Length: 291
Ligand SMILES: Cc1cc2nc3c(=O)[nH]c(=O)nc-3n(C[C@H](O)[C@H](O)[C@H](O)COP(=O)(O)OP(=O)(O)OC[C@H]3O[C@@H](n4cnc5c(N)ncnc54)[C@H](O)[C@@H]3O)c2cc1C
Image 1 (cartoon, rainbow, N blue to C red):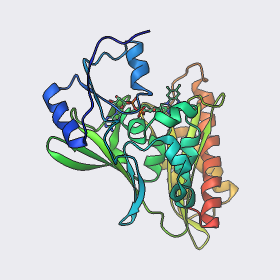
Image 2 (cartoon, rainbow, N blue to C red):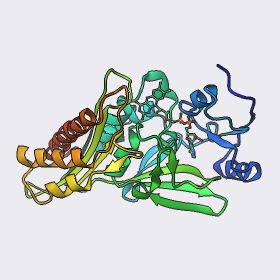
Image 3 (cartoon, rainbow, N blue to C red):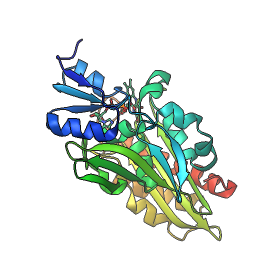
């Protein structure tokens, strides 16, 4: 299957790419790793007349800690995240998610920026960024702006990016002492999208849960925060009863639609299981001082 004909440009910087998008108008599309966009074009579900390929912009793939946050360049590949020492030491939840995305060929091409900008509720990083309370940096004709992950995912395949804006960086706050986070995905087979998945981040203080942040994948039109589950944990001992209450609240928050991966009821049930397991992982890492 071939895509419709399109024009192609490969600007040498994000600024140049923004200028090119402004010239071309809203029909033009940004191309990053191409893992989601190219299949859509081959199926003719997307027929952009022009692709602006940001994949050749230099110095746009990096993971570095600066001023109390981890800065991730938009073109950082899933495979870079999996292999990153700073991620392994301080942000292992990011590698939890990257490692369960598709297969090595997708992970070698797919970018973190693309994973978020695509706005697919089945993608794994949106929930992780919600749980970590990350910020997305967008560059447009009017300059740069920071968008909290909490307001970035607007609707199915729709984000807060304006036409002509490019996601250039993701910023994750450094974990506070006593923090831990984990991502657990339940899938039919390795490499599939999630039946249900959960990201959990906790901060323990004097052995109790001082703060919890929980988000779900594939449980609605966007990745979503399970605030009821977070409230169920506040101030409690991180024991089995607290985790079961959080899982029950997450089942309530999940509104998945039925498809070949399962019924709504099955997916809600598995959302609860994923939350309980993600919390166990997060709490274990908090005890180990591994974030
Ligand atoms: C077989 C297969 C299985 C997959 N399984 C999973 C999975 O299990 N979990 C998962 O999370 N993902 C999965 N994916 C999706 C994959 O992770 C994609 O790589 C990712 O969603 C998009 O990243 P990309 O860099 O390839 O973006 P592209 O495909 O190039 O772009 C995707 C969309 O985002 C826009 N875009 C990309 N980058 C930017 C940017 N910097 N600024 C503004 N807009 C931008 C594009 O215009 C396009 O609309 C799978 C993909 C395939 C092909």
